[in-house]
Length: 356
Image (cartoon, rainbow, N blue to C red; front, side, top):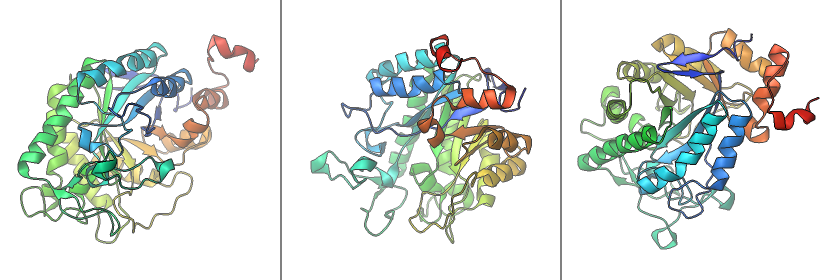
């Protein structure tokens, strides 16, 4: 059997294979109340039928103001939780592990849908005031966020733990914390977006404090059997910004507090990043974190060939692969990959006529 389809057990959960569906924002909460819709059950359910070992719901905000857009998912109340239940059940029914990414967008919140321009939404047009660790805008054309007080920070940490509790109560079997791509936790981590002079700013230890405290609180409210992942931007690719060496130090701290896997992405916190993309362009980051912190990692970014994914695992660059855009194009990619690597795949009975 190929390594890609060799099961992996993390804490009390066994994943049938190492193909994990990346969390991908759909901007499709039609009522703008954070609740998932029929779109989400089809979108996520199809990837479960397609054979992925884990299906992760998109960045789901822990507060109303933490959404990237009014159309984002949220998990801060019981109505939203109840709306997720059939999605979780469907994913599990088709032998995939249901997961969710919990997030807060910070200074990158209150935007429009990407296909409508991603423009800032003012309060009079369904937007809201944005916040961040420091009053530093993403760039000169963006609004300046309100600096979070210590009381605000405490409330946000509690919001993450409350959402995590909702998640496990409705059946999610894995939780990922979104500490990447220039969103709130990433804003705290980076010296280009965090110039605080209290215990949440300054040194690497202080800038990591928000993320570490979120992990502690979340780990305290979820069962020991539930894996906890963290997605980080391993490098910002900006002079004076967050580095791979910083990420290794952070990953060591996250591991000591109960994080089981680092989902290794990059960038997103500055419009001035210098980042060249090509197939597997972030794999080396996963490899460096895996070796430097001795922790499970996931590689992500333009992984779209079965042999490519297999080789990443064989070369010990990561323990799993997160796949995004290719699974948007072809939700049955895992079944095709299984056929290519192992000589056959168990397609749903309803689809057998298509492959015979």
